[in-house]
Image 1 (spheres, rainbow, N blue to C red):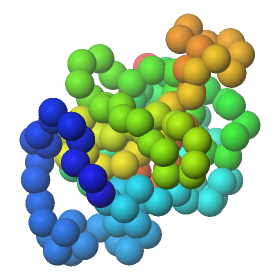
Image 2 (tube, rainbow, N blue to C red):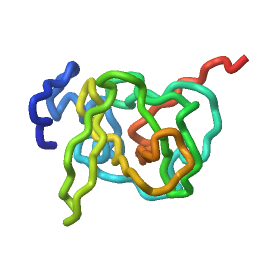
Image 3 (cartoon, rainbow, N blue to C red):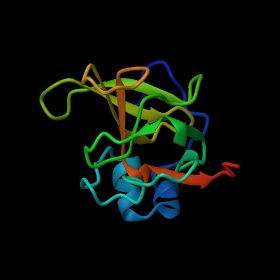
Image 4 (cartoon, helix red, strand yellow):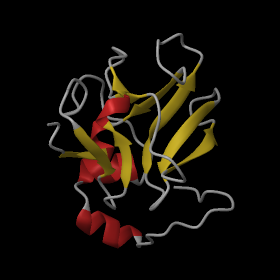
Length: 142
């Protein structure tokens, strides 16, 4: 994975260390910017209230209150948590220009963000995130 210009991850591990901690599928997405197939992720349709964390380092990234049904095959959020929880960078890997979303703590690949698609959300953004990049910690909604 190419480094993020001007940013140093707070969690730094060698490729061997990441491979020891992550499954091959998790490593392929989180560390090699892969994409899981649509409609197979464990969080695509979940309505559980909680906090979504980076599966690689445990950093809190999104809250369930910002998750919405985009019907795209991956979990979608209209906003990450405040601050530098995620980092955005230009991605030209498929011939076009997309905006890649990385964990602000360990710089693992999470997915992509899209704007102007017309979803009825407060930000008009869709953070399209791989389920395998996340871990949901449920919270007591009552």
